[in-house]
Image (cartoon, rainbow, N blue to C red; front, top):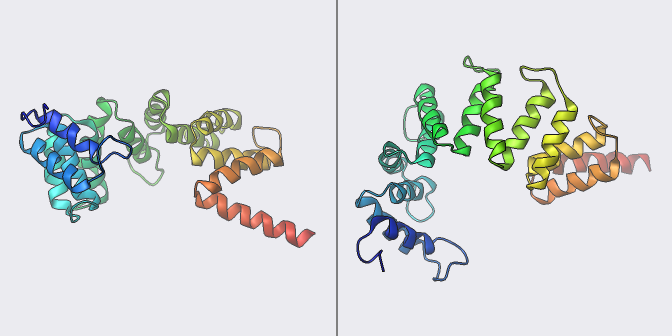
Length: 242
């Protein structure tokens, strides 16, 4: 097909099949990587991103941050949004490059301009961190809200927490519970947990232990640590009482 005919985007798509559970080919990450690399060497932004991701995660090939950085940069400079996000992430955490918050913010902003939800959350986290000299709650709220409008699950938790904690605004438990409820419908573990806690404490909602346990159990089953610890704690308290 087109992949064999040297179409770089088709090569990347073909590689993705070997890397996608349930695709009509036998899963073979090594084969996937070979196609990503071919596509990347032809200059395809997506292929370059997947080569970078392979080096970054170190699952298919040996982890190599320098190579990840090289391929992410090639992809990001062509305007590929998720590559821009990963570059921001690498600069922010100092993975394979000296830590550089300004450079991270620059890449995150470029990615946000292309409506990347991951970058909206990452940038929102920087601007809503009270320890950060760049703190700007209104900007963070705007970033999280735009990811929420795009139905990005973790964004409901982020907006909810800003209402809950009163970051740059008075605390509003009713608005918070609404965000958490909508996020829970999208199966956000963080939202299950917060909604469970609110029902347990009767904050912004009627106190309702049954609902509290239902949401806390959903978070716990998903492997959300805080929910597991909280359930264990109330369990031991109840045993002491009985």
